[in-house]
Image 1 (cartoon, rainbow over the protein chains, first blue to last red):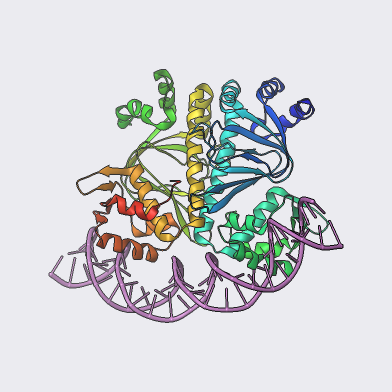
Image 2: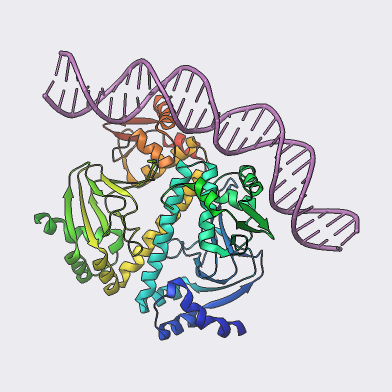
Length: 235
Length: 235
DNA sequence: CATCGCATTTGCGCCAGCGCAAATTGTTCT
DNA sequence: AGAACAATTTGCGCTGGCGCAAATGCGATG
């Protein structure tokens, strides 16, 4: 509650979905928002839950993972500061299609489906932004389909690292550090392979000094070597 | 030109994106529409082309395929009567991310990005419908990612057939017929496998009488057998 | 009708990557 | 610090499915 006034107005304008909104519109947006603070390793929502809300991450990071009836799971994406999540089910069936886990302590905002619908109606720009966001994500998903269908594990892993670095990379002394905990298993679940294969591929890269893992944070030292392996246009 | 009056007003209301619009709004929509008739085997747009438009298929069927720099291609989806296509790039970078080919003679309508933006602004319901459409497609894409990542070829093919049958299936004497030309290569490119593997799997199914191919149309006779192989929840 | 071109089938060999299982290292909790 | 647990590495054998290439089937065209 006390947090709300501290970080809402400034941050809301920074969220991609509210770009270009007038201050008065942002006020409207803020009024319908629910702010929350969650400790790490919390389940934010479960695959199959109803009453979806539109979420935005103010700080921290979140893993979105989908699992099939057979238990096999896939990491849909990692969410970093400023991004929306849980938005796919909005205006469709109303059930979350994946699990969301807080990987670090997080603060998030969310809006109910009905409130968001009202906001979009009153402030048309929100719809446009939203469409842009989902459209972009759809393109990413389709590129991923193509990757899974046509490339082999090593290259898929290289791509995954590059994408993560581009989206959540922080320039540090040693190279580009991906700013959230990333286990082998996560990388495997991103790339559609097994923990074992991921390990077998990544370890040599670490031995060669292309990567470093410290405090659960992965740093890419030799970006160019990874790019070499990825060697493909459509990123 | 003469076609326009014949099939526009009635059909536009049938398009998913214009559901729930008032007649006066549909008039507005119609005014900005460009109707076209194209013979089969025409390229409707190329991957990489600029000046995207929002397309809707009035009649016929279209294959959307994406190819990587290495030549490997993936069938993104098949479009049937009433569906939108080429919509992914709208409001993002403005370039088509895939090729669209007319598999039969087709009639299509399209709107320029600017016109569609205007329509959405004037008739908010269009935005909502559009978001629902893209959201649904995003869910499909993510399910496909999971499938590619976790299931093997046989099961993926079974799923693909079931999905196609559900979306474009026509009840006939022998079973459910998928109403557009579907080559082995297409099925392979949908499932992320090779022509050869697809053949190796489908031929036995045909021999067992579960499927029939006639006039380039595939008919599923024993739906239950295919479902057996697919045996998984999240369709 | 003969020919050409395209789609499909099928045999064969090979290898990327999975699964199992054990060893090793890192992390958390008391 | 020590114990209990979680994550990672790695050896080994196996196989699903790819790649090559040849054969066959089928429709279109002159």
